[in-house]
Length: 278
Image (cartoon, rainbow, N blue to C red; front, side, top):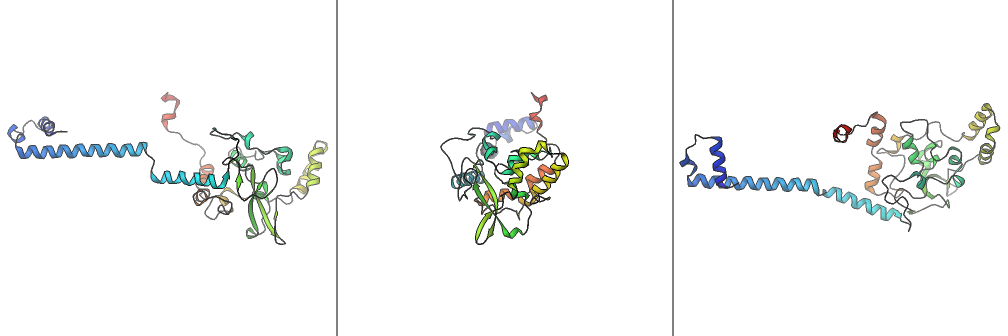
């Protein structure tokens, strides 16, 4: 906005102002300066708006760099692309092969949590990278139990997890130090009985089934680990020991996602996504 434009604006706003006052050189200089200041303010505002809309904050860039660093350090990608290009990884690409799966999954299947319609999808998602015993074994002393990654196919302990991000072909398994050696706690104590039950269960009466199930489940806790116990500041799992970097560990130790799932019955979308706006 130039001084001349500014004069015309003032004249429109206050027609009673004499023309000679508007033509005063000092006033003209002041008007010109005000015009340049206003123009500079507009440019600064437009610049800030462009920065906000089109440029990521430094913290976001740093966060993405940390995630990439974690992926490169914690995962060693295979030559083939598992679920590449998909927003949601297909469950068929991460589901455990039932024929070689642990006995829990061979009996209950990959999607073993089905009773709670509200939470079952979240629970089942965890079965792709957690052994059942991680949440369901009877706890003696938390200090006695550690958690380590084991390969699904070979059963070997992994120091670095291979595979696509969040699709490692491995699970977190609880272990306990026994006679100076870490022993896996996901070994089913009644394996022979479980295999026989799966083979002949259709021949048993309802009462017989219940009796056998109680025998099979005697090592299972009636109170599994809760969402809040894992996703909190004093998390049940030590994410740093499992290989997650500091940023990712902090994310996993936040309770907000648990609160969202358990406290909200409805998820609201902005009105711009409403069908009425189409």
